[in-house]
Amino acid sequence: MAAGAPRVFVSHLSGVPVFDPNGDQVGRVRDLVAMLRVGGRPPRILGLVVEVVSRRRIFLPMTRVTGVESGQVITTGVVNMRRFEQRPTERLVLGEFLDRRVRLVDGHGQEGQEGQEGEEVTVLDVAIQQLPARRDWEIDKYFVRKGRGGALRRKGETLTVDWSAVSGFSLEEHGQGAENLVATFERLRPADVANALHHLSPKRRAEVAAALDDDRLADVLEELPEDDQVEILGKLKEERAADVLEAMDPDDAADLLSELPEEDKERLLTLMRPDDAADVRRLMAYEERTAGGLMTTEPIVLRPDATVADALARVRQQDLSPALAAQVYVCRSPDETPTGKYLGTVHFQRLLRDPPFTLVSSIVDSDLVPLPPDTPLPTVTSYLAAYNLVSAPVVDESGSLLGAVTVDDVLDHLLPEDWRETDFHGEEGIRHGR
Image (cartoon, rainbow, N blue to C red):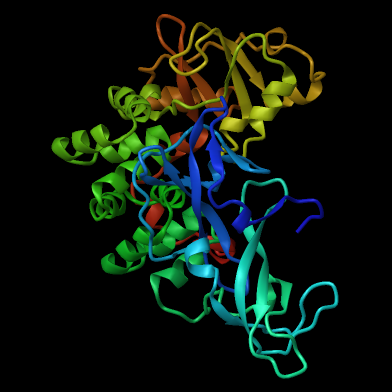
């Protein structure tokens, strides 16, 4: 853990207000949601349980928390108002960790304090710390009170210990529950998790899918064969299925919904947030093997008065795929698809060559003709290959940017239908050509 990384004791977060970027209060923190992990790794903080004005408790992922400051939490402003439901792999920090009786495992606390190895202690508080250069948070310290420790030790003596000094907060490697599988999958790429899920029994696959958080399950679904996608989505509660579809890339969500019966598709679209549903409906209006059917509606869009520094800040966003991060699209307002007039593209390499204060409108590449949404797949493929691009703009007749086609989506449609079922994942598979 890097020195200077933010650390907060969870007792200081209980009841603090949660604000959106405009300063409007969303609600108050009532608990934190953690996931235990295997291999002696500290529990990861997944998000916050926030009580909103209606007294409903909702889940706020840590990826949507931009600041944890004295007496307040700041969010991105994107909040899902559905009621929080705890999953089998999740633990409530305030509700389940505090006042818990555990044991010291290394016999040492902090600042020279010592404890008897195996001594029973009570957890009074938990400290969480943000990982460097990421939005992930982990449990870092425990503040504990010693139990009965003999006549020479004062009853109620307290000390702060590292997370590794306390037993009972990690999963066993050899466990067979879905909880243990999810923890084991944590370090795998979504494509590798998808490969593992594909080879599980349908019952086991449903258990693991139910235990994954929405964002992780969305990433994994995007890498699964269509039959597995439909099967997993069909076994989720409808509100949860809508949440997962919202977390998916709009083009992948549209592809998945197109595999469902019309009645089920409409019901799920109705449950989705209106803005997300609108993006998906727009994509479903195009033929599948065209630029419009292949594109994502969430490329990086900037106005002409944005600077190189603004563009680089957007490119650095952790959740962007490499293909989408390779360029920004400059358009007149509005800067969400469908945008105002499309002016051109600025490639990542050009952003690195110009001073931070340079306006993107002054370095825009307007020579390449953008793709119309009805461009067939073979033409899209030739376009990317001819100009050595990993992404291309899709623009309608009025000159508005509709989205961008990325090379990964093109490859997905060029490969054989069963390519995801090929056991090539992992270094050994690649090395031996599987």
